[in-house]
Structures are given as structure tokens and as C-alpha cells.
Image 1 (cartoon, rainbow, N blue to C red):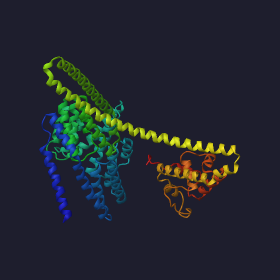
Image 2 (cartoon, helix red, strand yellow):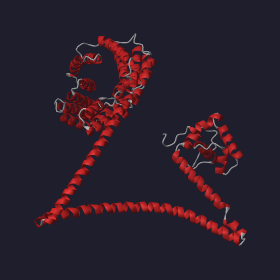
Image 3 (cartoon, rainbow, N blue to C red):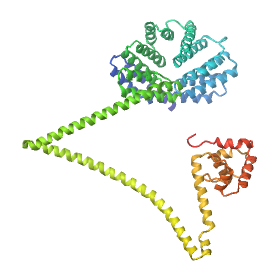
Image 4 (cartoon, one colour):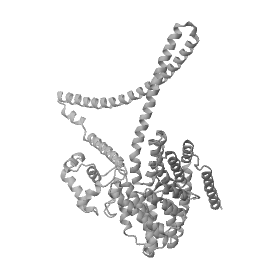
Length: 545
């Protein structure tokens, strides 16, 4: 009963969001108003993500339920792929791979082709064009149904269009567009006329032919009565792009905002709308603050999805916007300084005038109160600065104190030795320096080495022990913050100390003993002797994990 109620609540929430979207649809040509609507959606984007995550979690619960029913499991994996394909690349790729595994076992050529196309979409969305091209050669649609053939042609068309956008060098770009148009033609033959998908495909075809009026007409037809947020985003974004080419920048911004809102509604992370909007606001509207905010969100989305080519595209405009933003802030700061200086000069002149003119005593009193307030603020600032300097002094004092302690200890030793030597008290001198003290200092040094090393390489002991079989491990390592002699030898090697002579000096053993330990350890490992140190060097540090 609880689960049923919960589902009703979530469905009601989704319906409410759709209603809000319809009521707030950007129809106004007022760009500021449209941008405010977009900002409100950005603030609430977390709700849409939670809704998507809930749907995903519910689907994932079916994986175990249908573990022994391949056809049902294939359906669940396909649905999970659909949820993830424009949301998270890694997860989409995982479930696309799962569908391919099941299709390969079943021998269903149609499902096998469809699952390969899912993988190809993942590659494309992540900017892996070569991998997409290689995979396309393996796909055979000879015995596939219309849906799969359509999926194949549209995916191939997108591959070549994306390659043309990414590689703008001629004659390659023109060749890619030509091939994309050929596949678009094949897709159009399979589409139902008058459908939104048909209109969208015709519009894209005309866009690539640079027939912008026809492309605009068909994109608008595709948007009419369309309730699919992903399709809305693609079509509106394409319209915005065309309007930028025809220098209709307000129309372009409105359509791109529509696309960005639709992307937020569908929790799409593999998107271009916000990047296009940020570029347009920066280049044509000089709205640096909003451009910076949107390009940062676009970069976050690309990072979440792991879209490499999107990151590259964003990386081309982000530094420019960021530099302009910094320049604007500096100009505003300089303007404020100039204004403050001007006001201050005027205030001084006014103050001098009031001193000269005895009638302005009341204004002089107010001015004095203002000065007192400023002095109070300065006093507070000076107090904080004094406190900061005091903290610095304490740290510097502690540093010099440690140096002083070391010098004092050395001075004490020198005096003691000189005194014993002058009185020829050699026996007393020998007693003053005990071997146990040196051993104790050495142990402290090793302990400090172990702790520091294990902070750098927290998984060292675990990874080291993996190089041996259970029979060859003499005993488990009981202390996670210390190393035994054998581990210290290879810890030094991991730090780049390869020479046995240096290792022997540090560990206070002979070179022969060190070499014996190394040979003994390598012989116990399942790894070949010449590969053992390579395995040690592969153990990752904290920053590498």
C-alpha cells in the first residue's frame, strides 16, 4: 500500500511539473522575461533529477525480478538505457552493452543490430567518432525491421553530421555532410509523413543544405503539438541555431531558452542549448554575468555526462567569457574607486567650505559623525589585521623554536664531548652515547617513514600482498600503519630509490642482505621476477586514485 501511494505521489508530481511547464512556456518575445523563466527552472532542476532517479531505481529493481527471463530482462535493460542515454554516458553504455549480450545469446539479428546502435549512440554522444565509425561497419540490418533500419540510418546521419561539425577542414567537412544527407534520405523514406519525427528530419535535411526558410518551416511544424521534451529541445535548439545564422538574435535566444528548459525538464545532460545561449548572450547581448553562469552549468552537464567533444566546444568559449567577466569586474572596481575618490574630494571641499562658512555647523557635525563611523570600521579592520599578524607570529615563532631546539641539542652534545675530551673521560663519553638511543631514534625514523609513505600510498600493503598467494604469505600484516623490512625495501623502490646501496644505508643493512631480501620476496611471488618491480611501481598514490 505504501509503495502504491508513493507511486501516485510521484506521478502527480510529474503531472504537476508538466502543467507548470505548459503554463510557463516561453511565448513572450521579452528576452529578459524568458531568461528569468529559465533561471527559475535551473533552480528547480534538482527536482527533475530526483524524479528521473526514482524512475531508474524502480526499473533497476526489475533486473533481479527478471534475471531468468531473457526477453523481459532485455526489455528492462532497454528501458534503463533510454533513461540514461542523454543523462549519463557510463550507465547508458553499461546497459547498452547488456542488451547486446542478451541479443548475442538469443541470436536475434534485429535486437543485435539495435543494441549495437545503442552503443554507437553512446560513442557519438561522448565524442568517440572513430569508435562509432568502426562499430557501424559491424552492423548488419539485412533482416531488421523498419524501426531498426530507421534507427540505423538516423544514427549514421548523425555520425557524419557531428564529424562535419567537429572537423571543419575542407574537403572532409563537405564529404561528411554529403554522406549524412544520403543517410537522411534513407531515413525519410521510412518515416510516416506528417509525423513530428518526419518534420524534424526534413528540417534537419534542409538545414544541412542551408535552405534556412524551409528548415524553419519544418522545425516549427515538428514543434507543434509535440509533448516529447527531448524532441522539443532538439528542434528548438536547431531553430535557435538557424536564427543566429540569419542574425535574428532575439528569436534565436527565445528558441534556445525553450530548448534549455526542455532539457531541464527531461534531465538531459548531453545538450548544447546552454552553450549556444551563453555564446549568444556574450557575443550579441554583452550579458557577461548570465553568459558565464550558463556556460558553467553547460560544463557541469558535459562533465556529468562525460561528453568529450562538448567539453572541447565549451572550452573554446569559457576562457573568453571568464576573461571578459574578470575585466568587467575590474572595470567596475576601478569605477567605484574613481567614484569614491571623487566623492571623497567633494566631501573634503564641502568640509572646508563648512569650516569657512560658519552657518554650516550642522552639516559639519554630520560629517564628523560619518568620519567617526569610518574610523570605527577602520579600527575593526585594524583589530582583525592585528589578530592575523599575531597568528602568523605564533607560527613563525614555533618554527624558529624548533630550529632553536635542534641547535641547542647539537650545542649540548658539542659541549659534552669537548668537556669529556678535555678531562680525558673517555669511558664517561662512551656511556653518554648509548646504542639503544640511536636504535630508538632509528625506529622513530622508520615509524615516521612508514606513516608518511602510507599516507601517500594508503593501499600499498593491500596491493603488495596481492602479489603473493595465500600459501606464500607467512602471516597477515597486523599493523596497517607500519611496514616490515621487506615492504620497506619495495616502498623505497616505489619512491624511486632503486640502488641497493642507497637502500642498505637507509635501512642499516648490507647491500648483500638487501639483495637477498629482494630475491627472496620475488621468488615467493606469483609474479615473474623481472616483472615484480613493475607491479610495485603500478601501485597508485592518493592523487592517482
